[in-house]
Amino acid sequence: MTGEAKNMPATDLLATYPDLKHIAVKEGTVPTVTIRASKDEGGWHMDLSGKPKNISGEIFGLPFTEGEGTFRANRDEAALEQLQLKVREMPLTVTGKIRSGRGTPLPPGYDLSFRASGFKTQALSSGLFLKDGALNFEGRLTGTSLEPKLSGSFAADSLEVDPLSLSAVKGGFFWDFGKLRLQNAAARCAGTDVTIDGDIDLKTGEYRLIVGGHRLDAAQLTENKVTGLLFMSLELNGKNQQNSASGTGSFALQNGRYYYMEAGRAKNEEIRFLQGDIIVENSNFATRGAEMKLGRNKYSVSVILNEAGKAEIKLGEKRSWSLF
Image 1 (tube, rainbow, N blue to C red):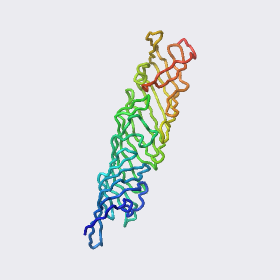
Image 2: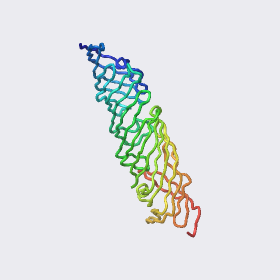
Image 3: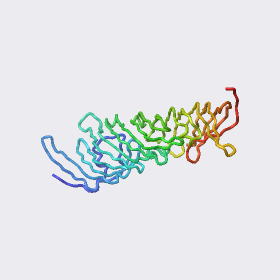
Image 4: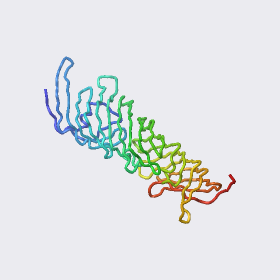
């Protein structure tokens, strides 16, 4: 027996499924639902299929809109075939199955895969506005609505966090009670590997990022004004709004050279050490307590970002002098 239903609300279709907890459909319709009914020794069975339009709602704290795709569903499970969503205007593709758990003591269960390319970081939090930064990622959602297991991997060709230019960015992530946590994330920066750790609250958009690296090529960070190998660590905390990042860190360099102009002539001096604290307020980079020893003279210094996003050293007052 076959029939059709017209313009069925998507919420009515999901009414046969218990609370999915972290997935909620709030709007959308299925223009035509094909209904196939059959009967056997176990009684009547009903299979539904259709192509939903303009589905919107929330998935693990993130709002989605413009959902379209194909589904097949019965009493036991719903199969999603290439469901296309937009998370804050960024495309996301979801495929797989959701088990209803009906007739069993189990809650609804997931076996879903998802993927995205060119996904702008600000779709996760407005505070993660990283110029043209975009991620490619894929993952899986398994487990049940009460104990979901969401994990995956991501990659990006480049991300700019001035004065750091990150390339070959890659790592993993997993969902942990409302937060998406990074796992084994790393990137290339200034000729070496840097580690990236942190998490983001998908509901509030608040985030924490920790970047650390050893033996960074200072010349690449300063447009060749400073040479030598640099140690750097930085922890950033931000909100779901642009220019909200704040944080602290430190940097240190030993045995390098400082290149500068004096009276129209290019000069350079030996750097015995360069060190200080990093301060970020409202996404603005600055330093505190920084000092540099050039030859026998120790100076206070400040490090600012120039228009190109590179670090630039400004010499301050001479603090001390030594024989060695």
